[in-house]
Length: 308
Picture 1 (cartoon, helix red, strand yellow):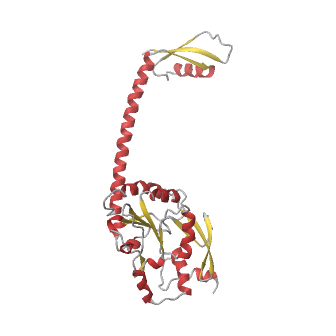
Picture 2 (cartoon, rainbow, N blue to C red; picture 1 turned 60 degrees about the vertical axis):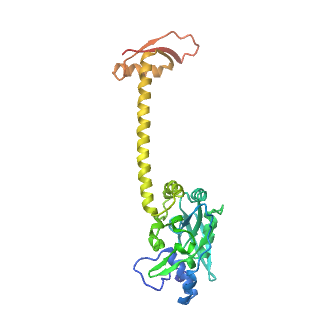
């Protein structure tokens, strides 16, 4: 069996839909390494995660949340990885979600960060090394830490050993937080949209959420936060517009009351005269030419006085 046959091998259960990159990659391991079902018992062990007791815990997914990976680079990509699984080489083309590095940097100031993927360590580690060069992510969890359920895998947040009111998970699949739906934020899938702004828009909410006593229900709190911000922005815009109108009225009144002297070229003066003749100046502007004593023949000085 050649590499292509291995890469695109389906999982044991047949599905009508096309398998995702994650399913394709993980199927490679199953092809080479058959495990007894009893081995799943070790997935239920507790997980040692950061326990600062001062900050909440944010669990981040990898594929379609922070990056998108595929076995072909036809549509463009950010970097290429050579992944070795059971002595077999696979080329993986990775596209990074816009704003990832800044997102991780700012998020780490408010949360302990755990990256939890249902993918393989052989693939996940080199990807994380590239997208998180400053090592903002404190703990990495992989497929073996997930809990098998019918139809796939889920991430049981109880394993993290933290009070669930202090734990949130950001994932593009609801199955990932099936056991604790109130702790999950369902993020939009990232494929290859380089204009994607999801992380930038999400960050202010997460900073606010880090200051709350209970992060649950995450999704509902996010909706409330967004609506509140929209209302605040509308009020702010109204206040700015109102102040601007008052200032403009004051400036117009002052301009009407105070004669001013301007230096302009012939082209500017001719344009004002034409607008005046066409009745386009408001208020009516009277232009009077003064003698020009300067040697510069390209400019003349005019007195502009306004008649109410």
